Length: 159
Image (cartoon, rainbow, N blue to C red):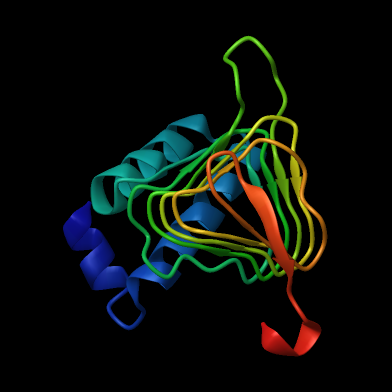
């Protein structure tokens, strides 16, 4: 499979390859081609060490600059123009509670950050590295820490 990727997609980078495979995976899930979906899921895991559910809603122009170790749960909603760095986990807080996070447009999740539970990362919010977001955030703001705390508002021109 890895050789197939090298032949089919030699002209694009790792970020674009992952984005393309996520698109194929979710298309296969929508068309109920579960075997094809599982094959693509395995390719994603083997090549990128990422576990991205085909049932997650990932918006357009979502960027994965360092696509390694990313985990996205099945009910997660990710908006457009979101940036997700390496080792980010987005999913539910407890296995018996079905409540997934929503990441709104133009947000950035830096390395090793975790977003869990029924939370909303509002539009334009930056979540710092090694942060744990377990409560909803404010629009155009910076959150850092475990648990993540509001640091400051981000001015529109400073993004």
